[in-house]
Length: 140
Ligand SMILES: [Zn+2]
Ligand SMILES: [Zn+2]
Image (cartoon, rainbow, N blue to C red):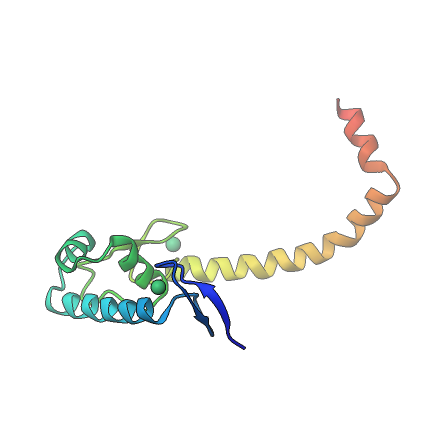
């Protein structure tokens, strides 16, 4: 079902169907910008992000978004690594994390999930018979 919503880019009310709440005009503009950035990088493999932004009149934020969304991957031999891994700061081509961190984070997630499951029950009992409050008072 479609509902009227405000476009997150231009604020116009439009009929929202799926995905990001962006109106057709802005979506088309996005596609257009995306294509231009891609072509620009193809022609200028050593260009920096600010160079791309000023030459094409597209905001750095938007270009970064393309990269974050994984739509745009920096081509070439690391000449233009725009992004940094959110965890270790290593240069990456697209997404949020480098390969190592992505793997580590995934392992962490599984570990935390299983640890949480283990801890949940004993902790509940502990709290219920009031020992936690007692210990807290004792410390002070
Ligand atoms: Zn719009
Ligand atoms: Zn990393």
